[in-house]
Length: 185
Image (cartoon, rainbow, N blue to C red):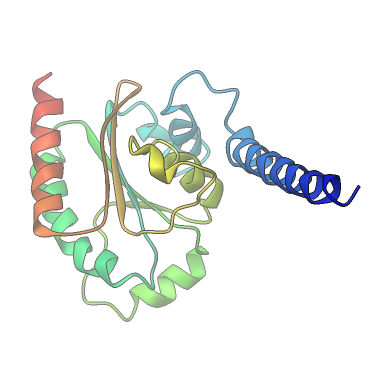
């Protein structure tokens, strides 16, 4: 019996860990499991916003996951504004998603010199969790939530064209190149 007890405890512990991981994955994706395409939850969020309803059918969507406390996000705002200026006539929609409340973001924006020129959606934690799961790097997928901001995503015609975590001059160049390619297709 003394030899079986440690084995039973080990097996039980492993089972609990596996079950917890499976439940976590299900919980993260259960909200969006009935959608037919990767961009459907994003388009639904746009359709549910009175101001962005007309944008729900935009062909190319650039999605920026960000937070007010994120220093790289703050540096990225003016750079993404430049990219937006370059492509705003090409049926490209830029949307910034945050889990924060609109009042918190507005209060923060009042203190900033760099303002968003692109649209914002507030209190979008579930959608952000879903989008983070689109990361092609599978080491980030196991039930994790966005931990690194900013994260930028480009979707066109139900296809993921670009996914990158973090900010650098190189990442802005990659977004620009991905948009050039997407527009030509």
